Length: 272
Image 1: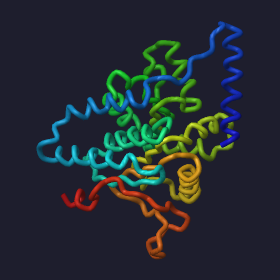
Image 2: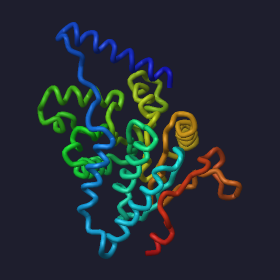
Image 3: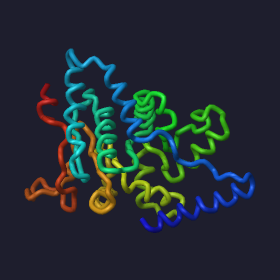
Image 4: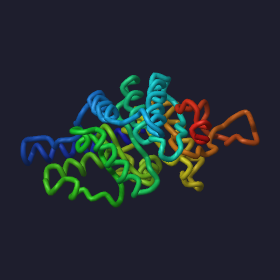
Protein backbone atom coordinates (compact mmCIF):
# COMPACT_ATOMS: atom_id res chain seq x y z
CA UNK A 1 0.00 0.00 0.00
CA UNK A 2 2.84 2.40 0.81
CA UNK A 3 4.55 1.46 -2.44
CA UNK A 4 1.34 2.25 -4.35
CA UNK A 5 1.11 5.70 -2.74
CA UNK A 6 4.76 6.41 -3.49
CA UNK A 7 4.68 5.22 -7.10
CA UNK A 8 1.48 7.07 -7.96
CA UNK A 9 2.72 10.28 -6.34
CA UNK A 10 6.00 9.98 -8.26
CA UNK A 11 4.23 9.50 -11.60
CA UNK A 12 1.90 12.46 -10.98
CA UNK A 13 4.72 14.69 -9.74
CA UNK A 14 6.76 13.95 -12.87
CA UNK A 15 3.71 14.48 -15.07
CA UNK A 16 2.98 17.82 -13.39
CA UNK A 17 6.57 19.00 -13.76
CA UNK A 18 6.65 18.38 -17.51
CA UNK A 19 3.14 19.73 -18.06
CA UNK A 20 3.97 23.00 -16.29
CA UNK A 21 7.26 23.22 -18.16
CA UNK A 22 5.51 22.84 -21.52
CA UNK A 23 2.26 24.72 -20.98
CA UNK A 24 2.40 26.25 -17.51
CA UNK A 25 -0.64 24.19 -16.45
CA UNK A 26 -0.93 20.91 -14.57
CA UNK A 27 -2.80 18.05 -16.22
CA UNK A 28 -6.42 17.68 -15.15
CA UNK A 29 -7.10 14.56 -13.09
CA UNK A 30 -10.03 13.15 -11.18
CA UNK A 31 -12.85 15.50 -10.37
CA UNK A 32 -16.39 14.79 -11.48
CA UNK A 33 -19.53 14.95 -9.39
CA UNK A 34 -19.41 14.33 -5.65
CA UNK A 35 -20.96 11.18 -4.22
CA UNK A 36 -23.93 13.13 -2.73
CA UNK A 37 -24.66 14.58 -6.19
CA UNK A 38 -24.51 11.09 -7.70
CA UNK A 39 -26.85 9.75 -5.04
CA UNK A 40 -29.35 12.53 -5.72
CA UNK A 41 -29.27 11.72 -9.45
CA UNK A 42 -29.76 8.01 -8.74
CA UNK A 43 -32.69 8.75 -6.41
CA UNK A 44 -34.31 10.78 -9.16
CA UNK A 45 -33.87 7.89 -11.60
CA UNK A 46 -35.23 5.29 -9.18
CA UNK A 47 -38.28 7.47 -8.53
CA UNK A 48 -39.36 6.97 -12.15
CA UNK A 49 -39.78 3.20 -11.72
CA UNK A 50 -43.20 1.59 -11.39
CA UNK A 51 -42.95 -0.30 -8.09
CA UNK A 52 -46.64 -0.98 -7.54
CA UNK A 53 -47.29 -4.02 -9.73
CA UNK A 54 -45.99 -7.56 -10.14
CA UNK A 55 -42.28 -8.21 -9.88
CA UNK A 56 -41.68 -4.46 -9.79
CA UNK A 57 -42.93 -4.51 -6.20
CA UNK A 58 -39.99 -6.73 -5.29
CA UNK A 59 -37.63 -4.61 -7.37
CA UNK A 60 -38.76 -1.58 -5.42
CA UNK A 61 -38.72 -3.36 -2.06
CA UNK A 62 -35.17 -4.71 -2.36
CA UNK A 63 -33.37 -1.34 -2.79
CA UNK A 64 -35.36 0.21 0.09
CA UNK A 65 -34.44 -2.61 2.47
CA UNK A 66 -30.82 -2.74 1.32
CA UNK A 67 -30.36 1.01 1.69
CA UNK A 68 -31.70 0.87 5.25
CA UNK A 69 -28.51 -1.04 6.13
CA UNK A 70 -26.09 1.53 4.69
CA UNK A 71 -25.28 2.81 8.17
CA UNK A 72 -23.82 -0.52 9.26
CA UNK A 73 -20.15 -0.60 10.22
CA UNK A 74 -17.87 -1.03 7.15
CA UNK A 75 -16.79 -4.62 6.56
CA UNK A 76 -17.93 -7.60 4.51
CA UNK A 77 -21.47 -7.92 3.17
CA UNK A 78 -23.42 -10.22 0.89
CA UNK A 79 -26.30 -9.25 -1.39
CA UNK A 80 -28.21 -12.34 -2.47
CA UNK A 81 -30.87 -11.47 -5.04
CA UNK A 82 -32.21 -13.67 -7.87
CA UNK A 83 -31.52 -12.74 -11.48
CA UNK A 84 -33.98 -10.04 -12.52
CA UNK A 85 -34.40 -8.77 -8.97
CA UNK A 86 -32.70 -5.44 -9.62
CA UNK A 87 -29.50 -6.08 -7.66
CA UNK A 88 -27.37 -3.90 -9.99
CA UNK A 89 -29.02 -0.61 -9.03
CA UNK A 90 -29.77 -1.83 -5.49
CA UNK A 91 -26.06 -2.48 -4.92
CA UNK A 92 -25.11 0.90 -6.39
CA UNK A 93 -27.65 2.66 -4.17
CA UNK A 94 -26.33 0.87 -1.08
CA UNK A 95 -22.72 1.61 -2.06
CA UNK A 96 -23.34 5.35 -2.49
CA UNK A 97 -25.28 5.58 0.78
CA UNK A 98 -22.66 3.54 2.62
CA UNK A 99 -19.72 5.49 1.17
CA UNK A 100 -21.27 8.85 2.03
CA UNK A 101 -22.19 7.74 5.56
CA UNK A 102 -18.68 6.48 6.33
CA UNK A 103 -16.55 9.01 4.45
CA UNK A 104 -15.37 6.71 1.68
CA UNK A 105 -14.06 7.99 -1.64
CA UNK A 106 -15.47 5.82 -4.42
CA UNK A 107 -17.40 2.76 -5.55
CA UNK A 108 -15.60 -0.01 -7.45
CA UNK A 109 -17.78 -2.48 -9.33
CA UNK A 110 -15.88 -5.69 -10.22
CA UNK A 111 -17.40 -7.95 -12.89
CA UNK A 112 -16.01 -11.19 -14.37
CA UNK A 113 -17.08 -10.72 -18.02
CA UNK A 114 -16.43 -7.75 -20.30
CA UNK A 115 -19.89 -8.00 -21.86
CA UNK A 116 -21.50 -7.47 -18.44
CA UNK A 117 -19.02 -4.68 -17.63
CA UNK A 118 -20.16 -2.74 -20.69
CA UNK A 119 -23.82 -3.43 -19.92
CA UNK A 120 -23.59 -2.36 -16.27
CA UNK A 121 -21.52 0.72 -17.07
CA UNK A 122 -24.24 1.80 -19.50
CA UNK A 123 -26.92 1.20 -16.83
CA UNK A 124 -24.97 3.31 -14.32
CA UNK A 125 -24.41 6.18 -16.76
CA UNK A 126 -28.12 6.28 -17.56
CA UNK A 127 -29.10 6.07 -13.89
CA UNK A 128 -26.77 8.94 -12.94
CA UNK A 129 -28.19 11.27 -15.56
CA UNK A 130 -26.13 14.33 -16.43
CA UNK A 131 -23.28 13.17 -14.18
CA UNK A 132 -23.00 9.67 -15.61
CA UNK A 133 -20.61 10.27 -18.49
CA UNK A 134 -17.94 11.87 -16.30
CA UNK A 135 -18.52 9.92 -13.09
CA UNK A 136 -18.35 6.35 -14.41
CA UNK A 137 -14.87 5.17 -15.40
CA UNK A 138 -14.95 1.96 -17.41
CA UNK A 139 -11.61 0.15 -17.30
CA UNK A 140 -11.03 -3.16 -19.11
CA UNK A 141 -9.15 -4.59 -22.09
CA UNK A 142 -11.89 -4.05 -24.69
CA UNK A 143 -12.90 -0.54 -23.65
CA UNK A 144 -12.72 1.90 -26.57
CA UNK A 145 -11.47 5.12 -24.98
CA UNK A 146 -11.43 7.03 -28.27
CA UNK A 147 -15.08 6.21 -28.96
CA UNK A 148 -16.05 7.15 -25.41
CA UNK A 149 -14.28 10.51 -25.62
CA UNK A 150 -15.99 11.24 -28.98
CA UNK A 151 -12.73 12.32 -30.60
CA UNK A 152 -11.99 15.04 -28.04
CA UNK A 153 -8.23 14.82 -27.39
CA UNK A 154 -8.41 16.49 -23.97
CA UNK A 155 -11.19 14.14 -22.85
CA UNK A 156 -9.29 11.15 -24.20
CA UNK A 157 -6.09 12.14 -22.39
CA UNK A 158 -7.95 12.67 -19.09
CA UNK A 159 -9.76 9.35 -19.47
CA UNK A 160 -6.43 7.59 -19.91
CA UNK A 161 -4.92 9.39 -16.91
CA UNK A 162 -7.87 8.49 -14.66
CA UNK A 163 -7.58 4.85 -15.77
CA UNK A 164 -3.98 4.76 -14.58
CA UNK A 165 -4.89 5.10 -10.91
CA UNK A 166 -8.70 4.90 -10.77
CA UNK A 167 -9.14 8.51 -9.73
CA UNK A 168 -12.91 8.62 -10.31
CA UNK A 169 -16.01 8.30 -8.12
CA UNK A 170 -17.32 5.11 -9.77
CA UNK A 171 -15.09 2.46 -11.35
CA UNK A 172 -16.52 -0.39 -13.43
CA UNK A 173 -13.85 -2.98 -14.15
CA UNK A 174 -13.13 -6.66 -14.69
CA UNK A 175 -11.96 -9.23 -12.17
CA UNK A 176 -8.68 -9.47 -14.10
CA UNK A 177 -7.98 -5.73 -13.82
CA UNK A 178 -8.92 -5.69 -10.16
CA UNK A 179 -6.85 -8.73 -9.15
CA UNK A 180 -3.85 -7.50 -11.11
CA UNK A 181 -4.10 -4.23 -9.21
CA UNK A 182 -3.88 -6.25 -5.98
CA UNK A 183 -1.13 -8.67 -6.97
CA UNK A 184 0.80 -7.69 -10.11
CA UNK A 185 4.47 -6.83 -9.48
CA UNK A 186 4.40 -3.81 -11.81
CA UNK A 187 4.44 -0.16 -10.85
CA UNK A 188 1.81 0.68 -13.49
CA UNK A 189 -0.66 -1.85 -12.05
CA UNK A 190 0.14 -1.02 -8.44
CA UNK A 191 -0.81 2.65 -8.86
CA UNK A 192 -4.48 1.74 -8.41
CA UNK A 193 -4.05 -0.04 -5.09
CA UNK A 194 -4.15 2.94 -2.74
CA UNK A 195 -7.37 4.12 -4.38
CA UNK A 196 -9.01 0.77 -3.64
CA UNK A 197 -8.62 1.64 0.04
CA UNK A 198 -11.51 3.76 1.40
CA UNK A 199 -13.86 2.31 -1.22
CA UNK A 200 -16.97 0.17 -1.47
CA UNK A 201 -15.95 -2.82 -3.61
CA UNK A 202 -18.84 -4.74 -5.16
CA UNK A 203 -17.96 -8.19 -6.51
CA UNK A 204 -20.70 -8.96 -9.02
CA UNK A 205 -21.25 -12.68 -9.77
CA UNK A 206 -18.95 -13.40 -6.83
CA UNK A 207 -19.21 -17.15 -7.41
CA UNK A 208 -16.98 -16.79 -10.51
CA UNK A 209 -13.86 -15.79 -8.59
CA UNK A 210 -10.97 -17.86 -10.06
CA UNK A 211 -10.30 -21.01 -8.02
CA UNK A 212 -6.47 -20.96 -8.38
CA UNK A 213 -6.46 -17.45 -6.84
CA UNK A 214 -9.34 -17.91 -4.43
CA UNK A 215 -7.49 -18.04 -1.11
CA UNK A 216 -5.10 -15.11 -1.77
CA UNK A 217 -7.97 -13.08 -3.26
CA UNK A 218 -10.18 -13.61 -0.21
CA UNK A 219 -7.23 -12.85 2.08
CA UNK A 220 -6.47 -9.58 0.26
CA UNK A 221 -10.12 -8.49 0.27
CA UNK A 222 -10.41 -9.37 3.95
CA UNK A 223 -7.29 -7.31 4.67
CA UNK A 224 -8.78 -4.30 2.85
CA UNK A 225 -11.94 -4.61 4.93
CA UNK A 226 -10.10 -5.06 8.22
CA UNK A 227 -7.44 -2.39 7.93
CA UNK A 228 -8.09 -0.05 5.00
CA UNK A 229 -11.60 1.32 5.57
CA UNK A 230 -12.99 -0.69 2.66
CA UNK A 231 -16.32 -2.51 2.44
CA UNK A 232 -16.68 -5.65 0.34
CA UNK A 233 -20.07 -6.67 -1.10
CA UNK A 234 -20.47 -10.20 -2.50
CA UNK A 235 -23.28 -9.61 -4.98
CA UNK A 236 -24.86 -12.61 -6.71
CA UNK A 237 -27.91 -14.83 -7.01
CA UNK A 238 -25.79 -17.82 -5.93
CA UNK A 239 -23.51 -17.05 -3.01
CA UNK A 240 -20.20 -18.97 -3.01
CA UNK A 241 -19.10 -20.77 0.16
CA UNK A 242 -16.43 -18.24 1.13
CA UNK A 243 -17.33 -17.70 4.77
CA UNK A 244 -15.42 -19.15 7.71
CA UNK A 245 -17.86 -20.50 10.30
CA UNK A 246 -17.84 -22.74 13.36
CA UNK A 247 -19.38 -25.51 11.25
CA UNK A 248 -16.25 -27.25 9.96
CA UNK A 249 -18.18 -29.16 7.29
CA UNK A 250 -19.46 -25.98 5.61
CA UNK A 251 -16.68 -23.57 6.55
CA UNK A 252 -14.13 -22.06 4.15
CA UNK A 253 -10.88 -21.99 6.15
CA UNK A 254 -9.35 -18.53 6.00
CA UNK A 255 -12.54 -17.12 4.46
CA UNK A 256 -14.57 -14.02 5.27
CA UNK A 257 -15.82 -13.60 8.81
CA UNK A 258 -18.81 -11.67 10.08
CA UNK A 259 -20.46 -11.26 6.66
CA UNK A 260 -23.75 -9.35 6.89
CA UNK A 261 -26.54 -10.14 4.43
CA UNK A 262 -28.12 -7.00 2.95
CA UNK A 263 -31.18 -8.56 1.31
CA UNK A 264 -33.97 -8.93 3.90
CA UNK A 265 -35.12 -12.45 2.94
CA UNK A 266 -33.03 -14.06 0.15
CA UNK A 267 -34.70 -17.49 0.42
CA UNK A 268 -38.17 -16.00 0.02
CA UNK A 269 -37.09 -14.01 -3.06
CA UNK A 270 -35.85 -17.19 -4.72
CA UNK A 271 -39.03 -19.10 -3.98
CA UNK A 272 -41.20 -16.29 -5.35
